[in-house]
Image 1 (cartoon, rainbow, N blue to C red):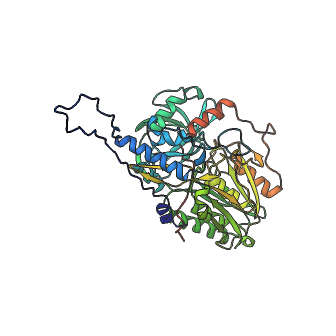
Image 2: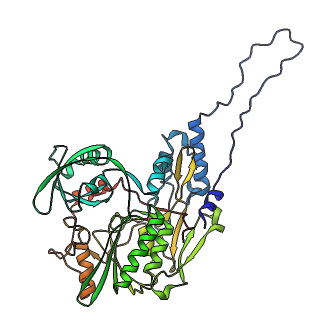
Length: 459
């Protein structure tokens, strides 16, 4: 479906009419009687009209629109984002004891337009705890302030603004200094044992979803490795980069591919479709890839998408590195490929669990994102609200940079490709401490997770 169709489909026209009443005074009376004026309908404020509009859209396009109670009052919420979060409890699905919507939200247009165009305005680093008192850089955007300063994944943060309490007990301070501050001084311990103090100043920069692409020769195996950080951004650049990467893999004679989605929170459906077509085997060409389904009001707009194989790389299996940060379009990619090839998942825990999507609906200076469609693969599989479970539970090798063959998750994939067995942890099984898991969930909250409809016009 073309993006312009979305805009045409979901424009809701409404108007507010205000009526007044008057009482006719009898001509026979010489003086008008003293009566109490009839009550008048108060004129709604612009803010209330905005909130009313948000609810009108939700009652129309929300996947669970018919579960929103008649008593739901949008004017009691602070803003459109609060309203979107307020409708989440009304999303019951058969087989699930609790509401399944954790996703509907709203964003100011100016902020959202920057995100979707691949423009960020921060330090350009992601962080996770390796242990309760060991905070690591998990990712770096190369054009960001951190990237330009030479910061790398795997560096340990030992001080922030002179504070050396860098533990899971001090997360509010850490979040504020990294995600809300415009200037922060860090002390990094580098892998070579040296420490360095770096002051980072937040700045606007362009993101690049392809972080790393490498080819490894291990015995008789040629292994391609792709770190794909987001399905959002400059889609022209993304398509060009995917073309470059898969041409490289083909020319190198790659026979196995590992796609690293461990921090990929999703993005455009069209990009997930395109990557699916690069990875799918030739035998899948022309067969059903996925269905996109709306509520019963808009079922006539349900769409089916078939595989259109891109390139000559012909894989029989695919390896994905995942985590609870792997969401939405990342999971869509996995679900698309499960029916047509052997899909192996490696990671520290289940994926996020988001088989549904939305698209931006403009309301005033906001975009609202009520969950509007779900996706279903060739086998009719959907509703993976609890996420996908990895075939091998393996640590996120935070002490190593992306592409390092000693990094735990990549090493596990290489081990399976070359021996048929996943690399085992020294303890025979990996378990993350609760304070680390909970702490990293909080550090992951600012990251986008979503499947965005539209953008299908790209070739």
